[in-house]
Amino acid sequence: MDIRKRTILKVFRKYSYSLSPDAIEFLEGILDNHEISDEEVEHSMETLAKEYNKQDDASMKVSLEILQRVYQTLQESGERSAVERDIIDPESHLYFVDAFDMPRWHWSHERGTFERATAPLTMSGSPESRVMAVRDRLNIIRQCILRNEHFAPSTLPSRDRERLVTLKSTKQLLGRPGDRFLLLGMLAHNKEGKLCIEDADGSVTLDFSKLDEPGDGLFTEGCFALVEGEYTEDASLEIIAIGQPPCEPREVSRSIYGHIDFLGKGSTSLMEDTQFALRVRNELPDLHFFFLSDVWLDHPQTLSGLQKLFDNCIDNSFIPKLIVLCGNFTTHSLVHGESRDLQRYQESFDALADLVASYPLITRYTHFVLVPGPLDPTVNSTLPRMHLMSSFTSRLRTKIPKLHLASNPCRIKFFNQEIVVFREDTMSRMLRNIVGVKPDARSDDLKRFLVQSILDQSHLSPFTINIQPVLSDYDHALRLYPLPTVVVLADKYDRFKITYTGCHVFNPGRFVGTSSFTFSAYKPAESNSEECVLDMEEE
Image (tube, rainbow, N blue to C red; front, side, top):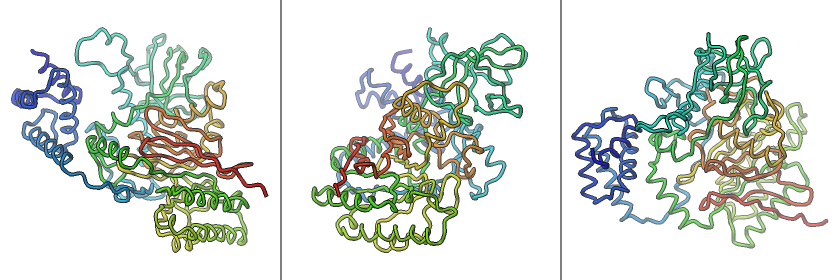
């Protein structure tokens, strides 16, 4: 068998497809027609295999008819992209996705892919949906692990096969004391109050006495972990290593599930994403999004800080396309507040509306997104939270035409980029609920551990429901899979910015500081953010 045919078979086998002689002959004909060198064969076949994988009628034995259709589509899209160069319009590619509008996708064991839920979603949920939410989290992480190079065996004979790690289930522990196992499961406490790891088949208690130091990350009750240890006579697992599951890059997930519309705003192919990224970089180099957190409207300095920000934008002809204002919009809780507190709360939003309206250029051009914080009154207090109550924002809606009252979390789709905005005090909740061995870490390490834990867990709230209640029918809105381009973890903790596995994560920090106003400016052309500081004027 020549090297070209072997490469063709290897690429399609990676996606679990088998090729008939006719299909192989067709693919070899494509390589010959385009005079593709041996070095480029694998890349070309990857493109065809990924596009074939996105077809709804794709069968495991590759259909020649579908393969020809895929090739024709790729040819036509290549020709269109070479000919059509219309002026790029950011407005037509900017979408705001509410957590309660996102379609719900389950992981299907039978099909080995995601399946869209057809049942109507409710705020109350059901026992089945609570179980399904946890199982979906486990299955999504598990399928990523099994695709990881350290766990997935190659289809070709190799010496590396001996170094592969094999995942086991808790049911395989029975009757095998003294053996070493690697398990994936959720950390939780059993009825006796002992820490255990649970998977779909059962649970086993954990013994941390032999563990010197855990892997990087923050391990809390409710998070999924990889644990390696020896099964003992007293039916516990003596841990020698514990770590976070590996995070899968966005490109890998999109190459497999690019045909699935997770946001409900239309799916795009990887080829379109690449073209969009190039055009945004070349044609919109100065476009910016501003992110502000803890915009306390009842603080005496907040409105003057926003005025200073708007003045700077006008003076420097630097109008952001988007300004995201995250709560809390009040310095104290209004849950048990008097009617006068609620009236002041509404008046502060009215003052914000008047301030924004006094800048006509910003009002016409800039989109404003308001994301509620933990202290802001909303219809529900569990995650995901609904948008700010309309009774407080009537003047804002009247005076700001491009106003978006968003849920928490919410998502922003801009061309090929997905931006997740989440306002929650996640760091303090994580540190309060660490189990097993607490990390001996400095502040910078904690920030890195927080980002790693959230992204490795593929979920914004990797806790049990007694720690952080979640609406089970909308748990998918907290999911971080496929990995977004950007995650804004607006937190009362210190500001930071970290890029992990290609995902840029930042915390803008609270807007009003002791001597300055702080926020973050995100640049889509570079997929990077910049920490911005405006000095307060001395009274």
